Image 1 (cartoon, one colour):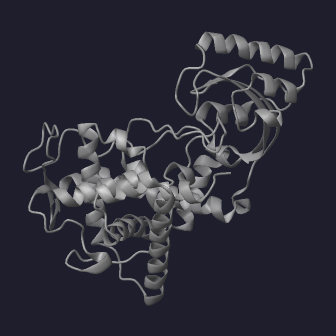
Image 2 (cartoon, one colour):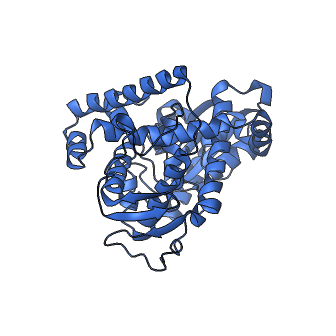
Image 3 (cartoon, one colour):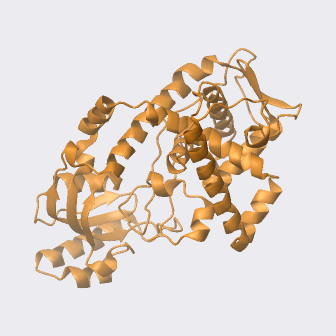
Length: 385
């Protein structure tokens, strides 16, 4: 499996990814409640953020970031950057505010939420039994069962609530805007890599990769065998032993340049090498079919709902939230521009998007929601396909 390669930008997107992956029910929470609803670190007297009708303590925020690093280890490197720490804190405040706006749960929904929360926690504890590093990470952060269940419920409840509000008309509109993403394409490709998708190390210079890709194209144009040439030249572990084949896949998960070629390249013709973040791809589109809205799978429609819900959440974080935060005060963090009456100059978000690396061994794939925020627990208990 190739590692997700998150790009610099808003951590809101990572938070939204977590919410999509750990989908749970919604329910109103009270900061004075006990048990699974008790706010971690609420008794701490050191305050790092104040907002209308609430506050965040230093201990609470430390536990939240520790939890999130367990769910998505890639976050750790970004939280070393002061501006992103500040941004991450504000987004946590946003979740706490939205938490107070959640509707009451039905008894049936409460049971469903409890079941999913307990399943998540049990999965994490099972993973700790075989992953000493994960266990130490949880212990060092002093994350209790109550803490973990609180943060899990906080994020997933809010995203589930936003998703429940998405209308059929919004889903249809989003589909129309992105319908090319649902084209089903069968293609073959040979990747001449410039970067190792697992380590990030340079494989070869770009000009060297282009020359090698042109060599592959020349051999294929002359009738060369895809199976043999892919095995010899391709640096894509997900397809090199299959003649470079990506069979009947929706193109929405591909990186932009590869997706563009899959959607536009003449069928049956070997195109000129296409440059992506991984290197040069020699591509032959064998078949391409559009997917009508009424032919979308339930999973695809759910993905569209999640996309719309994430956009709504991003609007709140960028437009309403800054006016609700009155103060931030992270220790040992540069907070230039922070005042008692507003937020820092770093802003709350910068677009709310992520750009991912390849997953499941496919060097043309972007990081997707189902793998982009996979937990250490998931990685320890289930082998990726």
